[in-house]
Image 1: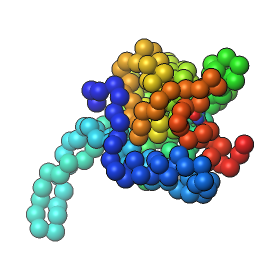
Image 2 (image 1 turned 45 degrees about the vertical axis):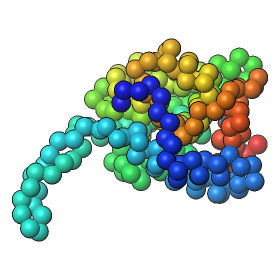
Image 3 (image 1 turned 90 degrees about the vertical axis):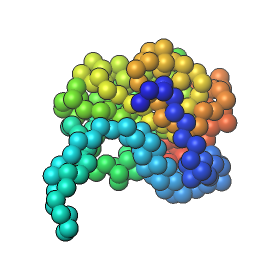
Length: 210
Ligand code: URA
């Protein structure tokens, strides 16, 4: 991927996103939409995966057919909201390895604090897709990518549902080599670090907490 920011303007993505933003959408519907939209975003984030060929036999004849090249890719979910994006991506890429990074946002400083990290082995040889629905301040995303680079990852992409300009700028400054794929670039953050117009707290909306 060459662009730092890709906005997936596909009509299905945009329609589903509007339903997710609507505050009258129930928890169950929100989760189902997130699963569907994450598969569509995964389609975009994996668009340029490298291919090689494998010799196979169709019922008609032999052929060299395209297959994905290299090691299985790794998905890394930023807990807890990132988990809402995993199932949709795993439907498309069932053999992906999955890691988790637990970061909570200190509400006073808006800075990320790490409380959990479990990553697949061999990150240096894998495409690593970090998933988190909301790229808000960009502090947790940048910290998660710092951690992945320290663990050896060199080929990283970031997939989210909504991005704020502040978060995109923060990621571009900290990790210009990490392309971002999102369904929308919203207006701005409020003084609590929430995206406007946004969709509220993604974790609360998908798990029904407050
Ligand atoms: N995290 C969320 O869940 N929502 C926001 O708007 C910003 C960060």
